[in-house]
Image: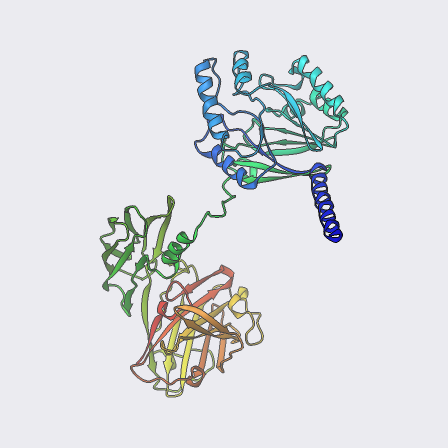
Length: 585
C-alpha cells in the first residue's frame, strides 16, 4: 500500500515537473508570428484570402499586419462599413490572434477615424507577447516622421520607457517613413527614439514591394503586397505577393519571406487525384493518343490516329481539342469540340498527311478537368514510329571509320531527326547506316561538325561518361518478347558506354550497369566531320538475324557544344513500344 502511494506521489511530481518545464520553455521567448502585407490599393480578388489560408497552415502563435485593409478614400460611412464588413469576413477565417495597425486606406481623412475606432479599436497601442513588446503606431495621415502628432510621440516615448527592459521590442506602422528620411538626408525622428530605447526591429508596408535594411543596429523591414496591386511583376525587385514568417528564440529574430502560393495543404493532391495523374501522364488510360506508323514514309505519306478521352470526374468534360502543326503536316480535323459525360469515353479520329520532313511533330492539346476544380493542360506531340533498313552487306566492310562509298554507298541512310521536344533539331546533320552479315551487325554514322576544335570526347575507358559528350547512341531491342534493351553509346574516340535495361509492364525494372558488349570500333575526325564504324557480333545480343527479321530500335546523336541532340524517334525512351523498327533485308 505504501509503495503504491509512493509511486502515485512520484508520478504526480513528475507530471508537475513536465508541466512546469513546458510552461517555462514557452515563457522564455520561443514563438512564431506571421506578418501579412497590404490587402488593398486596387486589391486583387482572392489574393489576401489565399494569404490567410496559407498562414493558417503554418499555425503561428500570433499574426501581425501593416495596414491597408480596405480601399477607403471616402468619408461615406456606409461605404466604409461595407468595406470593413468585407475585410472582417476574411479575417474571421484566421485561426491565430491578430493585431491591426491603420494604413492610409483605412484612415484616409480625419472623418474616417471614428469608423476605424468603432470597427477596429485604438489607432495606436502596444501589447506584450511572452518576452517581446509590440508597439503599433498610427502614421496613416503623415508623410514624414517629424509630422507624427506630438501626442502620439509622447505616448510612444512613455511606453518605450516603461518597457525598455523587455528582451525584444518590435514596432509596426504602415508607411516606411525611415526611407523618406534617408532619401531626403534628414534625421528620422522616430528612428532616434527607437535607437534610444533599444528597439530591435521595425515593420512597415505601403510600398507593395519588399525591401529591408539595417540602420544603426535596428532592422527595418518593408513588407510587400499580400493583395494590393503592384506596379510591375518582378520577383528580383521585390514585386511579388508574399508574407513573412518570423521566429523568435530568446533575443534572436529570424525572418523569412514566403512566396504566396508556395505553401500547400497536406491534401493538396489526394489519392484520387494521384490516380488521375497516373492515367494522364503514365499509363495513358485516361488520354490515349495512338502513334502514327509512318514506316519508311516521307513526303506524300498519309495515315490516321485516334485520341481516346475518358472522363473520371462527376461533371461533364467540355473543351476543344486543337492540333498545332507546321507546314510539313496537314491534319483533319485540326480543331474539334469535346463533350465527355461522367465516366464516359469519347474516341476522336484524325487524318494525317505528311508534306515534307517528319519534324517538327504535330502537337495535340486540350484542358482535362478533374477533381476539386483542378485541370491539366494536356499537350502531347504525337509519337511517329519509323522504320530503318538494315541491308545484308555484299562486300566486306573494313572497320576504319572512313565510310567509303564502295562499302556504304549502296545503303540508304537515316538522316532526318528531331529535337528532344519534337521540334526541328539544331544539331548539325548526321547520317546513320545499318548493315549485317550472318554473324555481325554493322553500324556507321557520319556527323557534320563545323567546329572541329570544340568536339568534346574526354572518356578514355569503357563505361565512362560518354553520354555526356559528343556521341552517337543506340537503344536496341532484338526480341520484344524478352523486353531487354541494349543501350550503347560511342564517342568520337570510339569509347563505348553500354548497359542492359530490363523492362517489365512498360517500365524499367532493372539496369545492369556491369553489362559490357564487345565491339570492333574505329573513328575518324576530319576538318568538318567526325565518323564512326562499329562491328557488333550478334552473340552480344544473344540472338541471330536474317532477312525479314524486325528489331525495335531508336538512335540519336548528341552535340555537346550545342547542349542538344538529334533523335530519330521522339521522345527518347527506354520502353521498346516507343521505338521505331529496324528491318533486315
